[in-house]
Length: 502
Image (cartoon, rainbow, N blue to C red; front, side, top):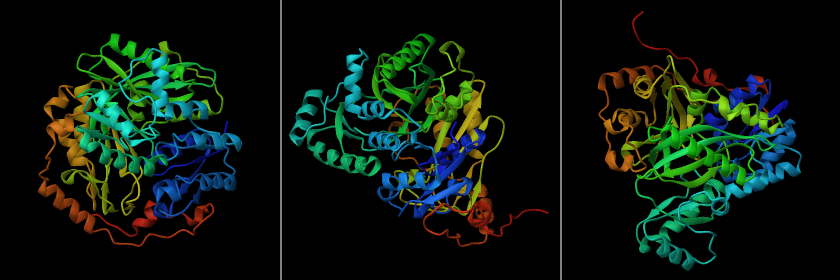
């Protein structure tokens, strides 16, 4: 087993991986850009290495800097989390050549499934239903227009090298195709370092259902059931749950076996997710493989009892898969809400700034995967996810009520967040009835504005005002930090007090 793992990521996912490493007796190493010098993941790791300026292209996407950090710290493996280099086959291949273990699929499998066009080709050959779309990346702009006319509008522009909604654009008419392609390429380049995009037929109001898969290096493969991910804004998921309200046992078994077949066709190892779109007639189509840990992995962990990060590390270390399909079952219901530093009333514009006050939810069946603390400055340079609030209960309705209570107990002052918006989503009668699809947000929340609880907001504001402003301690640039240099949450908050009765 590894003695030291470098985590090539930031925020809540880096914190999640650090905690898994500690439970396994592995020393976690963090990396950070100048913007993340005081990040929670930096404070929690045993060592942390500065890897460059705030822009991701000059830090978290810079392979040379990451490899140098591995060498400096003596780490034996790299966990990429999600985003950044997590689905970059060139990065995985370079680590393999350098004798460093990549905690993810082998580079050849990653190259295949990470290239969405090649993955579609492979699935078609394996007899797996796919959404009509382009079979290669065109070299000429005119080929996109020709393909769009053949598919029939609306079509969707998608990044070939990554997921998470980055680079996606829906195009309803030919006049909008050129600008959509340009915008998609820019976003794909920024997020994944690869501007390649392709076109698919856009399905109207489908459900987004995905299956979590685990595979070891010997080809043993199991699925850990489905996640319903239909609540999305700008093609990015914001609420996920399992089991899916749309699936019965027969369809669940059929889709799960298709997911395993897809991964075997790709020669896949480690953890990955096969994503499907489910239409109104309950026909399902292969969408893509996400060759990494998913943001929404906690809901699967809560209903199956399987630690997916631990399983990733074990698979990368060459351990055989000890799970069998018959031994796995779903117990209860889990829901996840992604907490973003965004203003839902302003079309989800990012909301960077200092967190003046933080109150986190607690209680039975409540899990919070968070990368923030009171007094921290949320940077503008990266995906604005702050935390993932996850609940488990015996059934779906109780899970919804538990999520409502958890969101009511969550407060972040100083920046805008999606907490209030998510409360209204969870309370919506169509969500409660399980009647969701990918058009849910634009259909029911197109002009959302929330009336705040004035009394509660005032109380929280007074509490926040009681916190003294303090400067954040700077850490020297470059090199692993020493423990005595740590600027953790309690140090960065400085002296503070809460108002109230004695």
